[in-house]
Image (cartoon, rainbow over the protein chains, first blue to last red):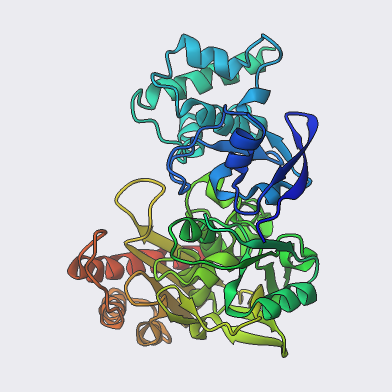
Length: 159
Length: 289
């Protein structure tokens, strides 16, 4: 019953095949099976958003999705943001705005922000705050994060 | 999480067969945003999860002016919000779907799952009740239809029998000069469970109200209709006195409990306020239709 299943996915543009038990979440599959520890475990109840990844372009809590449900899906994790050593504008602006302290929430914020900017390249502050409502930060607060997303949007528009 | 078997159904028949074979130990998996948390907490321990998201007809979202809305039970909430048809014809149900959790949750959670999870505080249920929605159910004995008003059995319990699943939610087409609205009360801007929810659907003929339905959430063991309050509106011009009478009847229909989210007295007060506001919102929309 607990036998492992083969799951074929595309992660950060590369075809990836992995084995997992049905009871393993996508988050566990990423971290414990594939060794991709960028996505963080926070609450395991879908409240904090630290485990946010994109599945077929949409932000989801990878703790609330089974690894086996990822069959055939295109997944983007925080590891897929930078191109080689070149950081994504969101990552750069999080750094220059000091939008993180402990950093546990950061990968989730980056992925939610990426999902937003992919769909809406020029969001208002209210739209940014709405899109990030499913991500909790307990040390930095949200203003610096919102500013980073605004500056990233501007940087992406000027590219 | 405990070990279990995971199966993907490709058709409704396949899902029914798998669920029937699994009996009481089998559960449907849609978005998973409730069931996976319940399993992690040990609240539910299904031995089999049947994933129905790959059943094409359960991902259907279509509107026909004669037959109304066919909403596949596995359609994620975000697709409802992104549908111009939904925003135009069922704005109240659309806003309810858009209030559930975060965008991360809305990308997975479905109205069908919200219905079957049968939380008294489910956001889409009062909106469905107000619209007179019907759950289309498939099971070993074939298909049947049950009004959402008759679907709930208690907190976290529905009236599905072993082997059955909700495949669609059917909503009648909106009549001329009609509309709906849903409002909920939470102590913060986003991301919380309703202290109270109120959905109103209304039909007008000039200034006169010709039909009304009011659905309430988080003020009873299940989401409920407030038929007496709705009846008080029908045939009137929705003058202030009539609305105040309906608000009183809404409060009488509710039987809230006190818990960490709010006291029974607070809920009874707020449910009237929300019903009044949702009514005004629905009327304003109906005038434009």
